Structure formats: C-alpha cells, structure tokens
Amino acid sequence: MSDCVGDACSALQAKALALSGVKAAPAKPPEAMHQFPFAVCYPYQPGSLELVSYGLGTWIQTIRLELHGMRVNLPQDVALMTPYGQAMLEAIMDDPTLGGVTEVLEVRPAFGVLSWNGQENVHIGWAFDIDAKFNLTP
Image (cartoon, rainbow, N blue to C red; front, side):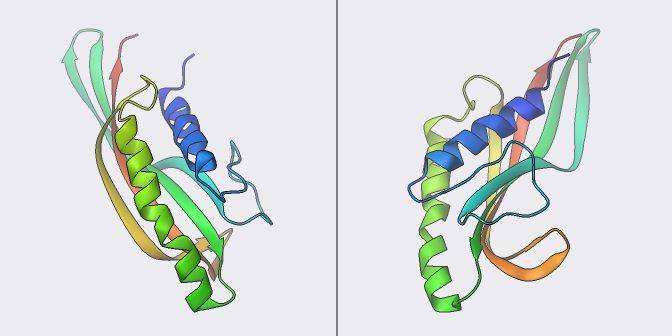
C-alpha cells in the first residue's frame, strides 16, 4: 500500500531539515523535542476526493508543516525564526511537486506561537498549511 501523503510529508521534512540551522525533522511527531529549531509535518484538516472516472480520482489534502523554535527570549526568538518563512517558501517553490509525489496548489504560511503536546505558548515559529493534489488510481 502506498502512502502519498506520507511521502509528501517526508519530502517537506527533508526540505525543512536542509534549511540552515534546523536541527531535527523527525519522521513521526514525538511526544517531546529538545532540539531547536525543529520541523514536524502531518495531514491537517479534512481533505476531498473528486472521482474523475472509474478508477481515477483526485485527492486534495492539506498538509501542515511546522517549524518550531524555543520561546525563551521573545525578541531574540522572533529574530531567529522569522527568516525561515521565506526560506521554506523558496524551498517549496523550487520543487512544487515535492520530488514528483504531488502537486502543491497553495501554501498559507502563518507566524506565531505554536503549542506542542498540549502545552500552550511554549514555542514560536511557522505553520505552513499546504494544499497538495494527489492523483489516485487503485
């Protein structure tokens, strides 16, 4: 069984890990992280399936990529994390198929406070909501 969304997440994790200074991009979101900045990626919000014809469908799924920085000294942490927004957008623009896995339709970046494992206001960074299109055949 293939996992096209998982493959897209892996490609995004690899792009995030390639950014200068990113220390970790675990394949699965762990309970706790101690290396900053780090990236996590997972399917986010409901997707949609359009049945094009018998045996052929188009799946649109939002994938969330988060780049987390530690929130200790707010001015310093904001200055550290802000440049990752443009860097990640450029990495996606350089390869909008994520290595041939999908077609990126839209990216919605947001900067701010990020929670982790139920703890609010512990991290600061970027959340990228990425709409990806997958062509499915059984």
